[in-house]
Image (cartoon, rainbow, N blue to C red; front, side):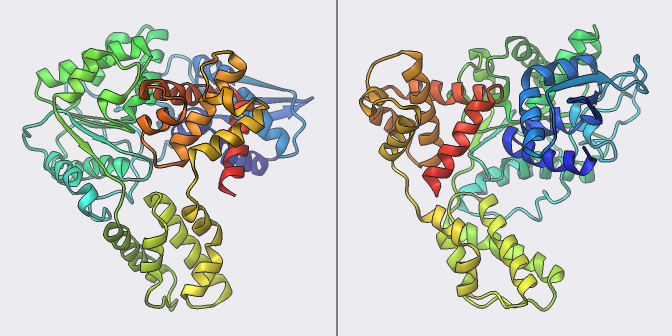
Length: 460
């Protein structure tokens, strides 16, 4: 098997496990060899290899087989060249050693260890962030934190759905602080990376070093904090780190996909702490904001696609029709410019409709919860009446949770509305079902395949 094949497999794994999981657990893997049906990978530490073996080995083997490789087993071994006594950086840093961490280490007594932050995306700055009504409060609050002076709210908690700009604002704050306050130690990382560092410190008996390092920062930024929910030891350490920094008047910025009160299995004391600062919702985009984002992207593309013309009305058409999230919108424009460049045509309304037919069709299609329930019931060969009924057998409960998850993912219905369509269930039951499927997806490749298939059938 060639490294090119492994590169293709890595791309498919990113789609399957998500960007954060991919960056933390897949990207650091180094393919060593494939012999006698066994794929040998090098890993940074034995703990890292054990974790990947338990949680991702099935995914990796499945994708290798799909790519044409004959693989019966996956094995992980610590790279022999790596000094065993050397401290291991965060998985994100190991994956991209050439990229700068969120803040380079600043020589200071007792604080000269490199901060274990994730690399920042150079594209995510305040200059490239388009402000509109749905995100103006979040933008203003982020700007205030980025000034580096005292603020009246701590922490700043940003939450919202996929593609609404949470991570963009987090990176923008870190970039701005680097420019304005190079004396500050700014640490940006995901909640998953925080957990990984903590578990590693426990294993290596370096918990005091971990505590000293994380409590020596001036600004702590943690993305996707919902990930630590249910992880008792990590929550305990996060709580104490949080308190120590607040007591020192150090700034904390947190993001999540939902409000603190809606994160299931989050300890009450952490939930209370997160709610004591400024909690800001990034709302779904409106037409004006989507149009502004497209106009900014077009200006950036003009230098790349010199001479390529776009006729009036195309951007307005896209802003009206593609309302799911900013990533889909930007991806549509990228595809449109690339296609027009390849075929040597100007970008017209007709070209946009032809080139983006699948995206437009998905945006037009308004799925109903009933349709999702019927399709899931058919797939798992259960009665629709059982789907919404009271039976709690595993053969019925799991498909019901799958349908709840898809209803949350593929419709704009609220949790109480979804609950009413599932036999009048409480919204907390729906939330539990959604979380359960999210947890199982990382471990159950068959479930992941089922979900991908159902999504294709429902969105086709």
